[in-house]
Length: 566
Image (cartoon, rainbow, N blue to C red; front, side, top):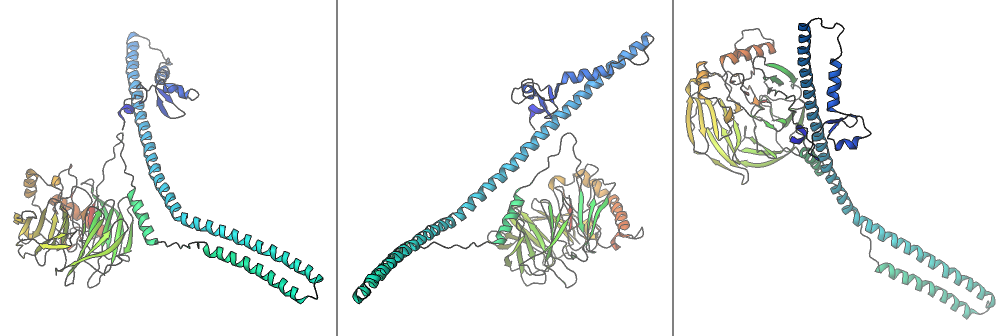
């Protein structure tokens, strides 16, 4: 925001803005006020004086002694200061609002200018397509006019000759030779005229015919691209800063979508619940949930031996969703999704297949393509993430980690000796580290150095799901002091099969929580399902794992795969 406006300085004349125009709702300096001569405006000094005069009126009961007079004067002085402070505060607030209004006007003008460019471009393109058609029309008009003139020219001499022939017939009715010569001359003149006109027609260029071919699918894609190219970013006012809310978007085994407000760790509650049972089956889609901008996508799913090729697009802003078909994608479940940070989401499908099919989803036009097929036989890809322009994928049942080059479509196996230890959960911190929880405990893998480190074997007995995924931000990782405190509180995971949750925030933590958080979520989930209090959490189906929160200032945590925090 312009500093001159905030400091009540006119940008044009560099003078103090001491006038308020009530008609234009703007501030003005002494020079600019001349432009508002016929408007209703006032000086800030007059406004202050009127308010002071109002409070300076004599009271109904006058003070009787010196003490009362002094007290009254002191009260008046304090009152005047309060009034002046109030006036100044109001004036500053008004100044900021005027600046905000001018900023909105500027943004509105930018929007108009951008769409004006598009309008001009469309007009030029329209003229480019219409130009050859117009030229052909003009050429046809000229030929039509010429043909009409020819018809007229053929009609006049023919009529004249026939009249002449009739006159001659009366005078030479008995002369057969003259009759034949007259008829032959008439027809020769007509044929000569027709041949000349036909030769002119043959020499003329035949107008070109055109047919408009419209690719409606491509036009719809362009419309979607235009819509995604323009976004209004809300700049919160400095006057009343908006407190950021944190939510978790979660699906569970009961095919329900839930929105959980975790802004206040002491008041975690459900804000929205959507029953998807008759619309979408997300039981086997816990690792195919991905956040892109203001949307959350869930791909594939199903239960038992059933699969489907549908996907969900959920809007964080409107809290509404649509279910569409993944055209070009076979029915699938246990997909692993990875956003490349630009225009595509990569989907790894290896469930019950001899090879892994990789699909690519375009977020701009919502189209799918079979990108490539790689020779990896695995039940599913538990974790797929992007790091330094490469996609890394972890396959727990064959205990291997692969590196995929999106440009060359090649896959390389990394030289990790991952023990067969029944991986239960996996996540990444966005810095090239993979965290895997198994019967051995919590391990960290560095994809650049091929280093494996056991962080904590006390977590080996955690009861957790077989497919849990979360993300960690380095700046959100707990400090050593917090880790000691967390260890003292006995960090634990407590998940059931197919629990799912992914944060929608930049600060996403490892899937852990303290006993205190454990009890909070325990009570919350029990009440939500209407179960009796005291049921062990491991017996509650599809529980969320809200991760370990740092004290009240912590930004946020998360849980398993189909959950997003925002």
